[in-house]
Length: 238
Image 1: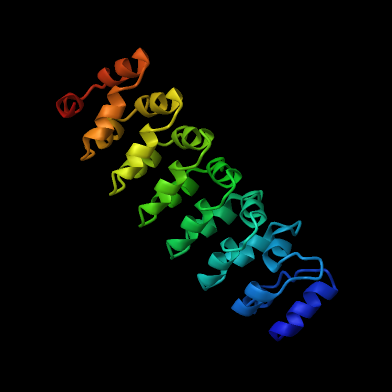
Image 2: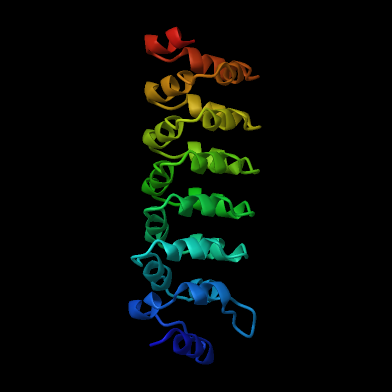
């Protein structure tokens, strides 16, 4: 089936084909230029399908161009619909893409709903995949979100490896953004982590600003949690 025939059948029948062969012929020209008479673009119609099979088939395409084009759409509806899918495998497939551009585009969306939906996923592997990205831009974009809900959800993850991955980033901007959050609950959750590795990674940051912001916290509970760490390495770093 040619591109033009696929587009004509898609809008004349008001049905998006679910066959992987049909999805493979959604070339760059269709994604960029074709709009239905009602004004809805192809990605929106794909994601609005009632079955969860559609976004899974879309992300399973062999080329990395497909998810990039999906996130580059001008409307904020597209990433919101993608993250609202009921299955966790959809987001996992998105983050497993080989290019670092995909998670960056996801976090650069203008609405605060997108990172919130990302962190509300039930599986810890989703957030781990996000933080394992090779570029430092991804965690920075995550922490730069305007709502305090985002860093809180990040620290509330049940596994300690998630926070460790965050602090292991090569740039000092990431822990700074974490400590600059306006709510005291963020730092409390950070210090309440069960492993000493998390605090060691935080204190090993090369800039003095990180430690200054840590000690400038207003509540006495934070200082108590800091001093209650069991390892001598923490005290020496302080």
